Image (cartoon, rainbow, N blue to C red):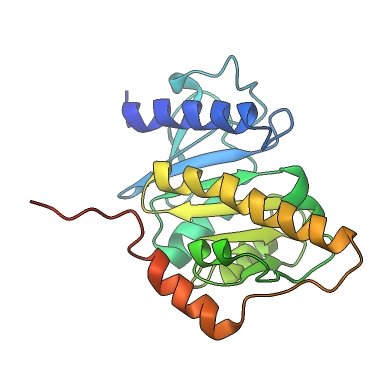
Length: 214
């Protein structure tokens, strides 16, 4: 089976998003790029019954190379993000706090230094109909220099060099959104991390967790 390990990892990633309440039903999608091939979760298949064989492999033009099912309706979005960013994997979800915050702001204010995990202040891509080239272009632009973005009136997206990295960012993105929503709910002014200090945090996050090699 073409890209067997990547397809199996996509199934596990979808189930992780479901367990962590980052998706509702099948409203989310995951993909991995290997060279000129993209493995992506299928459209409308329940995560609990999904198998690696259900995951679809396409080329960079979106033509199915292997798989019997329809790829996610967000395939154009994934392909555009790969072209724009050079990422190796993408996760997209519809978690409550990130979806809610995308209704009221144009970017996530830097109320928590975890914004640095995404390369700086996280942007909100303007709304466009799901599955359209317009949505793909909007999200690709919002991801410029970033590893995560919100999608206005829609959900959230993270990217990374590997699926493990992209997936690991999703809970952090939901966390900073939840913190901001809770702070806004008090009606009090929300303290923000200044741009210069956020830049320091971005630099620090670039090496966080790396251990010396011996």
